[in-house]
Length: 574
Image 1 (cartoon, rainbow, N blue to C red):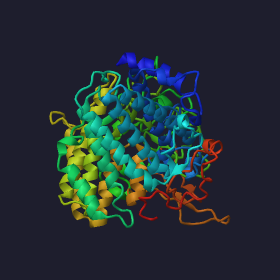
Image 2 (cartoon, rainbow, N blue to C red; image 1 turned 90 degrees about the horizontal axis):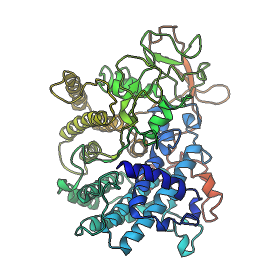
Image 3 (cartoon, one colour; image 1 turned 135 degrees about the vertical axis):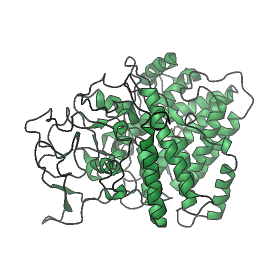
Image 4 (cartoon, rainbow, N blue to C red; image 1 turned 30 degrees about the vertical axis):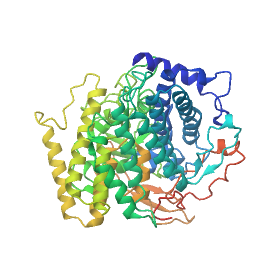
C-alpha cells in the first residue's frame, strides 16, 4: 500500500493541473497511465472533494459550519459561502478535474481489457460522488461532463431529479461488474479502500442505494409504495449491505508526512500555525449535556472528539488578557454569527481543536499541549459511509413509517455501533497514548457508554413521534462528525438536528441580532459577557455553484440568486 500512496501523490500533481473543461488534454495524457496507478488517485481525490481541511479540503470546511459542528471567521459563519468561496471552487476542481475524469479513464480502460473489477469500482465511486454533488448543489454537469473527446466542451447542467435514477443504474452496473468471475487483471493494494475485495464493493454499492432511496421518501409526490418495495428488497438480503465496522466505506489515511498521507482535517489544524477552524459551542454544549437538546446527559465521546489546548483553570496562551469569546473550562471557541468584540482575538495556541476522532488528532487526557504536527498522527480514515450510518438509516425509515420494525431497537444498535466506530478509529490513529475503550466490557470506561445509551433511549421512550425522529437524526449527526455533506443533506430532508439559530430580534439597521451567554464560571480569567450574534441570511437549501466554472462554461445556468429557496429535487419544502 505504501508504494501506491507515494505514487498517487505524484500522479495527482501530473494529472490534475488543467481546468475541468480541459480533461484528458496532453501533455500529461492520463489515458496512458495504468489503472493500478489511477485508482488510488481517484480514491484519494474523492476525499478531497468532500472533506474539511484548510490545505486540501473541500465542501466539508463550509458545511461543517452550516451543520453547526464547526465555526470560523469566514463567510460560512453567516451562511454566505457563495460561488466565489475558496473551498467550493477547490472542491469543484477536485471533483471534475481529478476524481471524475480519472474514474472515466479507468472505466473505459477496464471495459476494453475485460478488467471488470476496475470497471465496477470506477462505476460505484462515480455514482457516489455524483450523488454527493446532487445532494449539495442540485443541478450539476452530469451526462455531458468529461465528454471533450465527443466534442462537448461546455457541458450542460442536468436536473437533479433526472440524475438520481441514473446513479442507481450506475451502481447496478458496478455490482454486475463486481459479480463477474474474477478477471485476469484485478486491483489489489492499489485499491486503498478495500484491497480489491469485490464483496465489500458490492455491499458498499447496495448501501449507497439504500441511502439514496432514504433521502427521497419525504419528497412531495413520491410513490412511497414503490419506494418501500425497493428498500424492502435491499433489506431482505442484509449480507449484501455493509454489515460491520470493518466493512465501512472509508479511505485509510496514514501518519506519513513525506509524502503527506495524513487526514486533511488533521493537516489543516495540527500542521497550521494559524488555525481558522473552531469547534462549535453549540455542538459542544449538546455533548456536554448543557443544551436543552440532551439536557443533563454527558456524552463520553467528548475527549475523543475535542482536544483542549488549555487546562480547565489555565490562562490563555495567545494574547493577554485572553478575553475569550467562549470558554467552558478548557474548551475555547467562537460563536456562529458572532458580532462580539472578542471574536477576532488570537486563538491559535488556545482554541479547542479536533480530537483523535474524526481526523487522527490527540485524545484529550488533560495534558493541554499546544498542538503541532507531531501531537497526533493524522491516521484516521475518512468515513464516506459506515455500518453505523446504515443502522441510522434503517431507524429513520422505521420511524418515518416507510418500513416496519422497531425504531427503538434499531436506534440502540446504531448508537452502539457508533461508539464502536470511535474505538475503531482510535485503533487506527493512536500514536501511543493510553486511550480507554468506549465499548470493551473489560474497560471500566465502557460503563459510561452504556449509561449514555440508556439515557438517550429513555428520552426516546418519553418522546412523541417528532421527538423520536429528532433523537435519531441528532445521534446520527453526532456520530458522523467529520462527514458534513451527509449531515447537511439530513438536516434539509428532516429538519433535524436542531441547529443554532441567531435571532429573532432586529437592531436599528434591520439586522437580526440576539445574544448568547457563555457558561457561568466557565472562564477562570473573567466573567464572560453576553455575546451579540446575528445572521441576516436564511438557511441555505443548496450551495451556489463555483463561479470559476460558470465563467468558462457558456452552457452553464446563471448563478443562483437566493440559495434559501429549495432547489434539490428531494427537498420536502420544494
